[in-house]
Image (tube, rainbow, N blue to C red; front, side):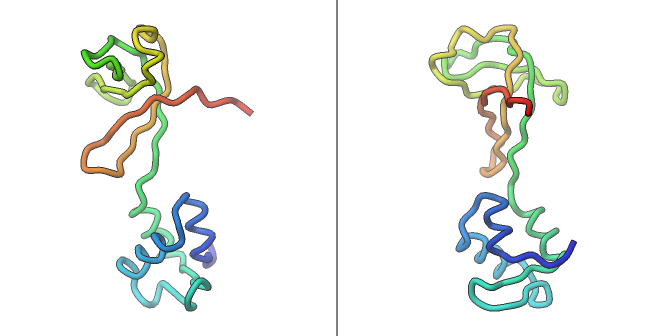
Amino acid sequence: MPKKRLKDIAEEYGMTFDKAYDLVTNKLEEEQVTGRGKNLWISERGQDIIEDLIPMVVIDRGVVISQAPNPRFVFVKSRGTIQKIPVQIPLALSGKLTSKVIYFEADHSGEKVKYKYIKAPKLQ
């Protein structure tokens, strides 16, 4: 994997250049970054470090066990976990998803992991 431009890395991960620049200046060593201004190039080792630092969204699927007391949430049983997971759903789907398979994404950006309903991905 050759060097990559920071602008391209920021677009790939869906973040602004300024946020990516702050991440690079605070977390990477000088040997991993070359160039100046918006013409920054990141080495292979630096790309690996950035990949580890950026929280990625994970898509999973599971069976809805029951409706939660809050109508905006359902409890889902996924293959990867042994416990039921509270997943946030649109209010229009409240009460209609019991015993159905749904897709959801895990957001690790905060201290606690949050799960949110997404539409089923389309096959290409």
